[in-house]
Length: 211
Image 1 (cartoon, rainbow, N blue to C red):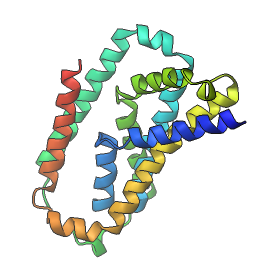
Image 2: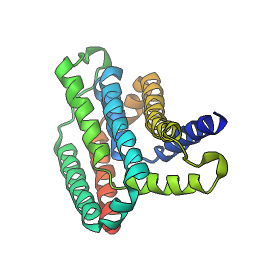
Image 3: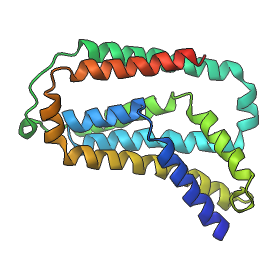
């Protein structure tokens, strides 16, 4: 039982720390808080956390096959780069409007679903997730206490991966929501979308150089 708990805690902490990088899902969550509300950002966070479960499961059960499939990894990276470039263009061309927080209306349920879907798509096409969890699994296997031996170990490992990512996104939502007015005041929204566009572009360039 101790090893199962250790696997869960370690997986959760590693996922939390690993998600600290300024990736597309994190940026989209921040943007959702600033331009919509916490519920929309939470929908993005939920959708963006699901791929952690999926890729962690693949790392556990299909890592040998996927590591050998260079074509699959290459295709994922190309699609991911294209999506990042499209998002960068959209944000670069987006018109700046005054953001009066009190006037921001709550999106409809369909928008929450769409937000979750966008978060899922951005995370699902992230080519770094699978290699990351394969590396983590190999790292765990080097420690007796963290070795995945039973189905409960597998379950704890996968559960910790998804929850760790979600906890990080939830923390971001809480922080940005608390200081939303201050952030918008400092940013003044003058260059917000341009900066966001550049960040997505830089992520795309980084992925391009990793091909």
